[in-house]
Image 1 (cartoon, rainbow, N blue to C red):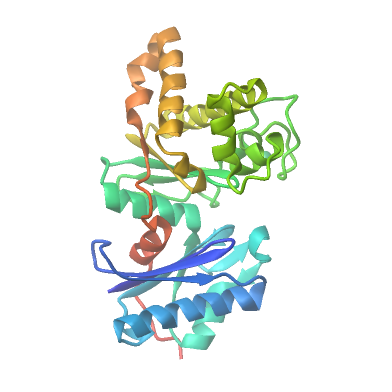
Image 2 (image 1 turned 90 degrees about the horizontal axis):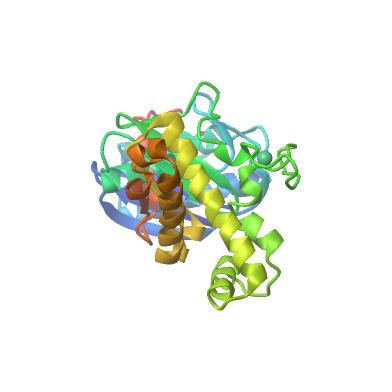
Length: 303
Ligand SMILES: [Zn+2]
């Protein structure tokens, strides 16, 4: 059995899986904020799943953790995890000091990409487009996660697409993420609805002119992300996941519609058949936790 933990901005999801990623146990916790609280959340998740499985944490084949931010896979240090209050934090050591075993830390989108890949098996290569508060992609190439030379692979949300666009948190202007993300929608579409993206799509469907402009800009941005991933890595399939994938078929059909328009105007794009290579992540599958479990290295006792 393998154990995986996905530490999110508000929730932490943990799973025990078999060697092929089949879920055996599942647990959800509220994520703490700051170095100590995040480490404690991870430790509680590991202990909780071990209890559900009636074994000790050291008896798992591997333990992996997915977390937002820049992760040094060798040292297990986490940086730039702003939503969790972490910067330059040695999460792997904090966990190993408490539990006496080694764990592997990975970026959460990389983990989600790998979990999705194992679940869907969509050919040899796949891009996972994480549409959440931000926009980022995870790549699986020839069955293996592709993290890049410095962990920056797939950070396509920070490709500037509009020189006169909005300032982005990364310091650039007009990044793709400023239009094609949950935060982009929240900034452009003022609403009290707890699901601003759903509210935006509903208003656009009802004919609201302002909503149509914002929705179309968002959908164009998502389609651009698909085009970027295929033109850089030529992955066989792009799977859209993350919180905004709950928009479901409304989102998928709109993105496919834009890709079809581009194909009609460009024989080059038409030859790549972008439209049929985009899928939606099946809902309720804990992709990042499963991926983290499968990416976790062999457990070593550390004390
Ligand atoms: Zn940016």
